[in-house]
Length: 197
Length: 359
Image (cartoon, rainbow over all chains, first blue to last red):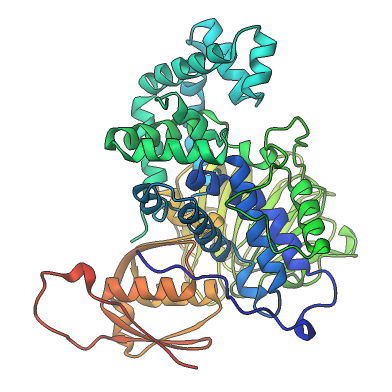
């Protein structure tokens, strides 16, 4: 694994900083915030933490802004920097070493891409059918979570069941879908783990 | 007690930092759990509809939080004891809508784009990215265009009134809002691509002797600038159409899309590509001037993928694969054959890539 670039530690001299807003900074936040959070979740496993890590990164970028923004506010740099930030966090929290080692190899694959769109066109039908074939209760809860993005608590309230039931129905759905979509899963898996040489 | 069901919460990020740490430790204690986690991630990806990310996260709230933190002069969130913050799945996601004719620059902001603002469609607009920068342009009709590095796109005057014509010098990915009454046409030096309802990538750098169109969905009509009807054809998904310097049209079906559109998500994919072409593209991508010490090196073929790497990392990786020596001074990069070090081939995996940095 190649060493990743770290955000430079030196503070930018005030005199060289743009007087007020840095347009690149704002545009980068707008463009990459969501995907950086998605990526960071894969490393840290907590949405809260992911947002904190990305927040810290952008705050750091702001504090050290200057001519180097041209290089730093690019997608490759931001991914590398947020990964470093997340790894630093995991180390400080004394997360299991094997997890950190794995996280350090986690590749930056965007959630959505043109080739995925095409893949999706082929898969959509199959996935839809697999979901439609879930037992009604199971399907309802799965869709409330995945499609409507309700929290587990909201789903429990709406479906009139306990939190534990929501969890176990989600798990049931996952297991059944995993079985039905096994051939396609291998393909999606390879998209995720296709490594960098 | 941690069990398999907690893996879903870990994937969704739906746990506290402490819970996450516990589940992570549980996962790595058993390789089968790691495998299961990967499978579940793939499953979540397949069933997620692909649009989760954009509206799951509240960018506006994040921006406000950053502004507040800056105003207060605080160094950061104070992780590893992160403060509680708005949950990502709070009910307030606003689906992100691309505002008509807005321009978002990838890289350093609006500064990377020339023109594009304050002029009406009647006069036409020009968008351009410098080497090392990319940009996304959204047009009023809902068409989205991703511009790769060192690319100019001219939106013709009167775009949308009749036909929707753009001129391209460089590389771009088009997601066209189809409208049979107003065909979308990409004009390049060597030929024209006309959308028949579709997503496709066009590559037509001035310096390269060909026009290449790769179709992701639906179809595209490709027409050579010189030829007549015989120099035209219709491309289907995964077709790669090429017009060479003599205006001849050819098609290569079933190509891997990732190779040709990977750049749209920051990946550069080269498959058995001459080093000369790789060097040229890396130059555009990272805004470097990449030279080969020996021109014959340009004929070496290389298969390599770069993803989210810095220029130095990419160059080191390339050096490793081809056993090259890289010398970099600022923007200028020189690739030379590495001196033969030793004959022991047993530990090639730890052969250090040579990267010498100058001033």
